[in-house]
Image (cartoon, rainbow, N blue to C red; front, side, top):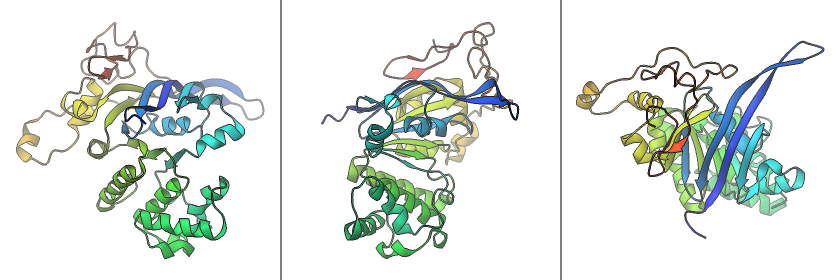
Length: 328
């Protein structure tokens, strides 16, 4: 199987949530444009980092790919199959190959179920194992993620945040998936625990040949774990390239602003470098600005162009994709 084979391809992915008014007779008065026409691919065995401010549509993108939200428009191809066209049993069979690690380890585990039931449930749902074999495999999975295999009869409230997230990772691994959406898996954890979970995810990727979509706020974490990085703003990807290229030659003004906020441990460099302070708030996804969505906060905006014409998302050379009139 070729290393550079495309496992997942997204074309024009759109996810709008309707806004309604009225209690008895509801009228459709608008849409929350959470995800608005995304195009990207993920190669087998690589990690694509997805970064951006809160509310820009990162988590919605991950859930739409897995069909937890049925997209408003667009296509999601997984191993050549269009997931948006699948329903019922065919979709359930493909879902076994895709899993998700959720952001909040306190909310994503059922407090009334034991750890053994939580980790073993996916294997029961997909009729993989039963009885003694299921219990043995569940204990092995706990050991793989760094937990005591005899924690199988304990409940989630008996564990720390980091341990709960390890349980979430074990649950995701239970059905031996090829692709995992990591939806900010470390943002709710202490800094001291974050590195442990990141190292665990990297070890598991190498051991089980996994492919990740890694959603995060922390650009330094994304730099550590990702092969390529996509920068998202208000429902759109504004820049997409390799990790090293993005951090050394960011082209989009929004990417430059994000990277200027990442602290550098060298005080001399930190003192000399220029910070880019964004003014104003992120516009509402219910009423995004015309033209480039970022023009209301951009310091290099071209009047009459950026506020009127939406920039094309195109390759500026070396698979460095960007949507900006200044770059073009």
